[in-house]
Image (cartoon, rainbow, N blue to C red):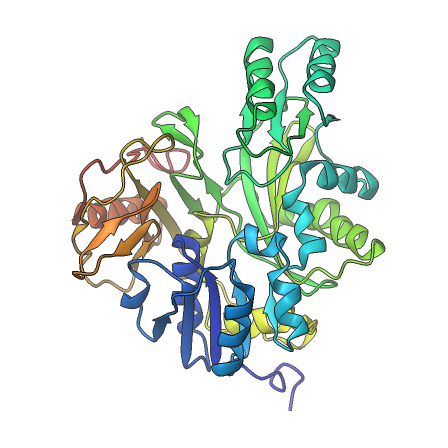
Amino acid sequence: MSSAASLASPTRVLVVGGGGRENALAWALRRSQGVEQVWIAPGNGGSGDLEGCEQLAIADSDHDALLEACRSRAIELVVVGPEAPLAAGLADRLRAGGFAVFGPGADGAQLEASKQWAKALMVEAGVPTAGYWPANSREQALEALEAQGKPLVVKADGLAAGKGVTVADSIEEARAAIEEIFAGRFGAEASLVLEERTEGPEVSVFALTDGERMVLLPPAQDHKRIGEGDTGPNTGGMGAYAPAPLLDQAGLEQVRQQVLEPTLQALRARGIHYRGVMYAGLMLTADGPSVIEFNCRFGDPECETLMPLLGPELAQVLLACATGQLHRAPSLSIAPLCSACVIAAAHGYPGTIRSGDPIEGAVPPDPQVQLFHAGTRLQADGRCVSSGGRVLAVVAQADDFDAAFERAYRALEQVHFDGMTVRRDIGHQVRTP
């Protein structure tokens, strides 16, 4: 019997979180070999529609109740979706209770939870990244900005749901972003990082790791801006596609050697055993890949885009990462298809959003089209309504990007809610004009 065959596949899986990412993870894990039942806590208005998945009304911040749910349901693998519960130590708590968790402990989650900590780690590891100046007071930040005498990137230090970064085009814009952070936009305990601006296309690379070894997923590219032509304010992401042709196999190998492996080594040197997904947001500069940021979880909407491409070994691979045994996992197969994801956002997003708009219609069954709910909830009368900024994600696969996006947009036309905001140009980099 091979070592891979001797690694059991989990049959009972818990996914923690309530967004589109978690719906996609639950859907993909339920399709994995050996998985019989998936629970999602707290899930959303569409979680109950996923075949073989059951929703639990437990907040991702309720560590006691999640631990009890794992015990009472004999959970064999926990996959933690969002960054906030990871930063708050949920993985540590569940591991201490004897459960296999895919997701770093609070120590490793600092990679996303503190920009200052992450930048210092990158410098220590020799990972390519833009020059930076940390600041823990308004005065310190403004002084650093004036000393540079040019527009800088302003990043809130802590978790900011993808909205804490301002790529300033002028010194005035950078100054305003600094003032906003220290006025408490992202919390009273304000600190930030100022960074040099770098130029080039952006791409996301995800490594599934057990703390020593890693498996890389196809690179993805998301669209942060709300407006077509990549205009307007930043969002959590209005759509994505994979595999992004920006990185070929040689490019991906370069990212592994220059970015991911040195980072993992630096974490180990600090006594941090990182088990979960390591997300590198990269800018492909004239000098090669440069890290914009690390995240300690799957990106959203890249996760929705990638999950349909991943093979039935996924649950086994995630369990192997969670238990430090990636060398015993089967190879993760990747479908040789193009995947396209388009987000339908709420009225007012990314500013003040409107909730409670009924969601009408349905996407016709198609093995190469998925509808993942994100910001939705079920009312007492059984109606599904909008309840967040990004409401739905429609994903489609095909042999080429033109066909994949055509399929995704066609499916999106079958669903509707008032104020639905959609970018029509997602994937413009890979679509035929």
